[in-house]
Image 1 (tube, rainbow, N blue to C red):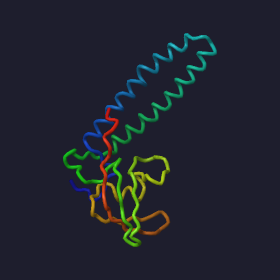
Image 2: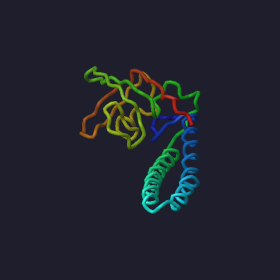
Image 3: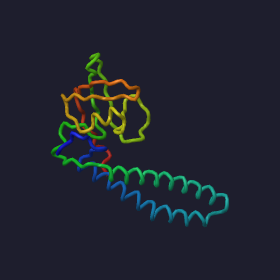
Image 4: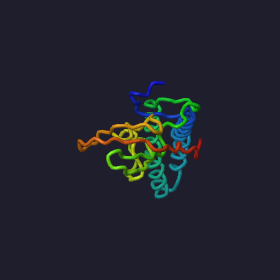
Amino acid sequence: MDLTAAPTLLVTEHEYAAHEQELARLRKQRDEELPRRLREARTYVASDAVEEIGHIQEEQAVVDSRIARLEELLQDATVIPDDQAGDMVLLGATVEVEYESTGRRASWTLTGAGAAADPGYVTSRSPVGRALLGRASGESVTVELPNGRTERLTIVSIEPPSRNGDG
């Protein structure tokens, strides 16, 4: 597989299947469980009904948002066979890099777009994330930063994504 033009998102077959399972579960929750709970809440006493309906609507918004994110992720993903992923930077991997200009080292976990702005994480759509995605230990990448500066990073090590929380 040619990864010289890094795709938006790389996931293993295993990760892709887990995301598909979560999407199916959330769609079922949206299409069956939440409407059932809403019908039930409408039978409550007025003040209790209003409160419960509000909670269900908030939960509906969260589920709809997660469904949309998963659909986008699955649409944009390039699937890497599990046996070929090996020592490759994928979503969820923790990558240690060395700045070639200073020798300083940094470690980041590669997350999906829209992740919290935590110093230990970098999104897959940021300049650094795009440069690292699909690369292997020992490779060097050039990153064009938003401030116009260019950095050259060498990938020192890669800790594969955790498989905890499999659907």
